[in-house]
Structures are given as structure tokens and as C-alpha cells.
Length: 94
Image (tube, rainbow, N blue to C red; front, side, top):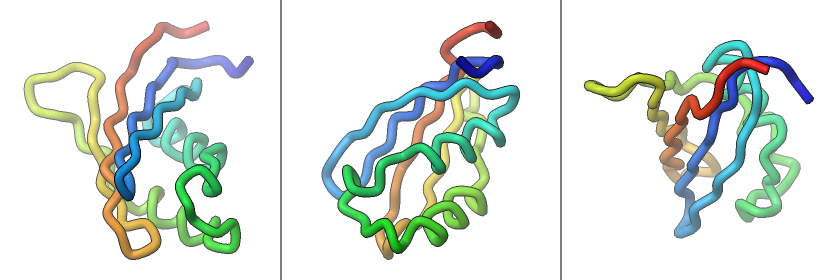
């Protein structure tokens, strides 16, 4: 198991909701790990678009939601469709 904070990702894309978790030392690293581990097949995106998916997620800043602690939102364009991602810091370091 990876050390770090537990982050929960709730992604809305193309009519579906996809929830997964990663452990990372920062929100930036969590976003990167999540994108690397996300099943593109589940999203209906060809694996040949993996590099573009990684760049799109990396280039989209995760913005801390006003009035919250440990909750971010990002909205990258994936395969010409907006993906809405909510990220919640949900656990302590292990």
C-alpha cells in the first residue's frame, strides 16, 4: 500500500459516475496517480488515447472549493467531452 493521504475521486463523464481512491502525498500527485490508474475502457475511451487523457488531467488545475477543507474540483476535456472531477481528501496518512 502506498503511503500518504487517501483521496477519493468522483468523476462524472459521458452519463456515468466513477468513484475510486488513491493514496498520495499531495493533491497534484493524487491526480496523476488517479489518471494513470483509471480504466479508460470503463470510460469508453480507447487505450490509444491514454497519453492525451494523462495530459488533459495534468493540465487542468484542481481548484479548492470555497468554504471547504480538503475538497477540490477539476474539469478537464477528455476525448472532446468535459469530465467533472470532485476530489476529497478522505483519510489520514498511513
